[in-house]
Length: 181
Image 1: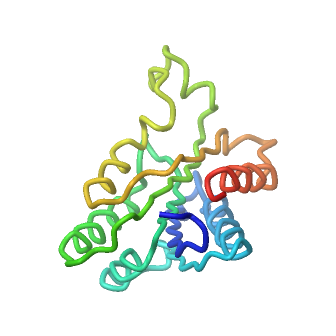
Image 2: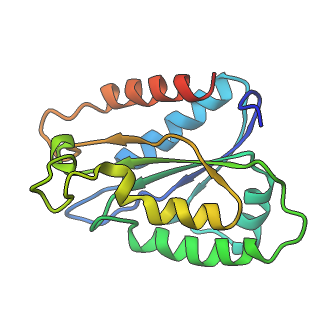
């Protein structure tokens, strides 16, 4: 499948959970991804989980999409609860539809409070396995329903005083430029 003029479903799993998170970083990255895709000639639809969703409408969007761009915070080494619920409900329903469109792709864009070097430190709780290992279960879930993986993009140290959203948006665009050539 060509990644030119793709139909892209952007799923924003960011949410407000004071005092730890206000959801703005993931929302900003999701909206920036939407702008990027539209400027490059892709058609987009977006779901902000926190605003609510209807399972049957999400299944239609999932079937419509060539690419699923999943923007998510990393909570306790995985999906936040609302995102896990979305996956359970929507992917379960999607599995049941007939004649699914083949060749779909899936990309994770994940934010981390941890430093990048911590994820690659063999002596840390991450055992040096990096972000791909943390998100492996989500990739397998999408692979199980016939959707292949695209390279992920990660954003680290999100709670730092000097964390710059502008710099992260530039990183996102650079990553998307490499993947969506």
